[in-house]
Every structure is written in structure tokens, then in C-alpha cells.
Length: 127
Image 1 (cartoon, rainbow, N blue to C red):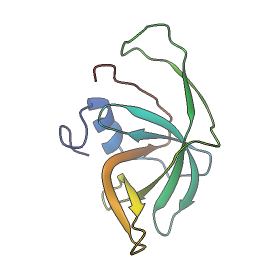
Image 2 (image 1 turned 90 degrees about the vertical axis):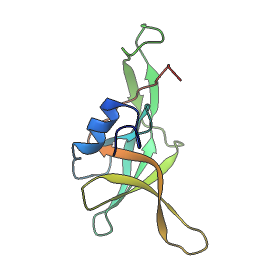
Image 3 (image 1 turned 135 degrees about the vertical axis):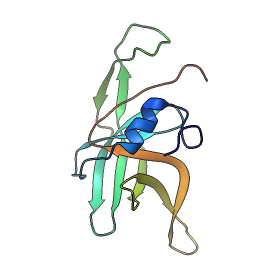
């Protein structure tokens, strides 16, 4: 993850480059976007293919700080949450992938990365 190219957030840059835990089903994960973060749960993992699927959690803001960087969240599993797929590259980073319906091959989306081992939700109010 490159700061200013892949992300506009120093926190997301650190999460994306600090390594991740070995995924296990039910473990927390965080999808890293340009400046936002989304809490997820690991729902499947193929260690041979190095592919993990995560499902978005329900994240409820419990802080009363208004539109600020000081954000506290409460997380619960969402069985209807969006599912995203990630593949681990040679550097140990997890990049989002999508299957091409015509060829059946997996391709990087260049949209997001995931950090495995912790849940974090963050909404950047500056956009």
C-alpha cells in the first residue's frame, strides 16, 4: 500500500503495511479504503490459494463526539453483510480480488486492502 497512491490515510497505510495475523474463521478484519475503514469478520480462508473472504459487520457509532476523528464503534456480525475476497501477495499484503466471469480468473481490483486480526471502523467526514 502506497501513501498518496493507494490510500490518503496514514493510519490505513500503517495497517496495510504492518502485516496481518494468519486468518481463522470468525476473526476480525478491517477493509482499508482511501481514508475510511470497515469492520469485517473472516468467513472463509484457503491457505493453499492464500485467499480469504470477509463479510462486513454492523458497525454502530457509540461516540457522542459528532463529526470528528474521535470515533467509538460497537460491532456485531451481519449475516447479510457484503462479502469481499482478498489474496495475499508476496509481500504479505492482502489485496482485493474479483473473479472475471468470462475467464474464471481472479484479478486485482486495485480498490481496497484488508488487515486481518482486528476490527476497526472509521468514517472520514472531510469528504
